[in-house]
Image 1 (spheres, helix red, strand yellow):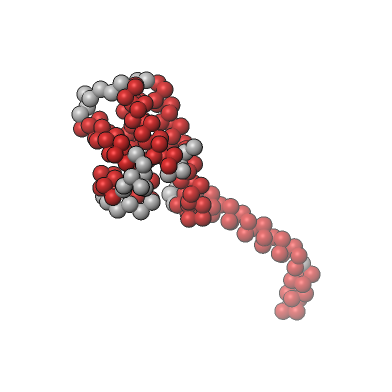
Image 2: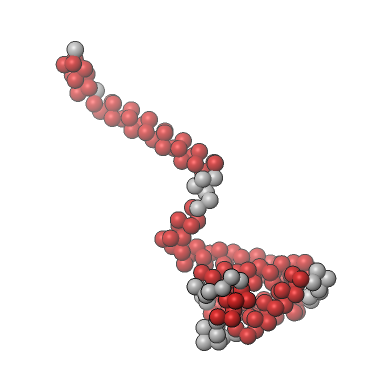
Length: 165
């Protein structure tokens, strides 16, 4: 009986290997499918990719965000201008945090930087103060020209940090 079983296995080994590979492939596919659908993999996938190519992902995200800022600026609408400034300020905070500047918030990080590191640091501090006014004073109005000047300040810093060209 054992001899018959061994004989059967040896005669059909290629078929058994193919069937095992096929079943394993199906199980692997469904495992990955359900991990992605449940969000377990999706939560940290950018983080894991960032470990290997952090500069590229950071730059791509920054470029996408910068395009969004430019689009908001072009509308000229007051609420979009405010959003553009808020977004630029948020990006600067993330970049300085990733660059290792200590501090709990952007105010503290900007205090750690000097003009040797970022040439327009004083302008950035003023732009950040204006952003804080936008947040704390809901009826604060900013016109398009002012918003463009503020965004240009952030743009210069982003260019120096090689986030945009």
